[in-house]
Image 1 (cartoon, helix red, strand yellow):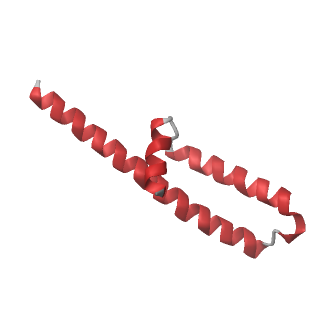
Image 2 (cartoon, rainbow, N blue to C red):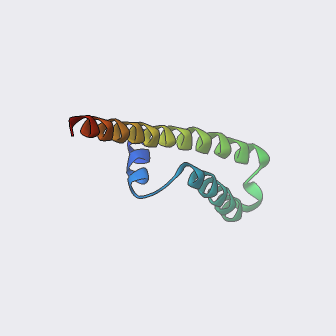
Length: 79
């Protein structure tokens, strides 16, 4: 499911470097919303979760990119 989401986001123009920006914004938002209860342990858990999620989504985007490149190569060979 996350790989599929990464594919869709790539089609919308989201690039790998955008995930870092989004992750920072997510952490800042959580820190602000939760306040003092947003402990170092909580932040570490969110960082771990976001890293896993974003890496899986980026993997989906890479898979899509590879498939598109292979399709283009095949079309070039046919012409």
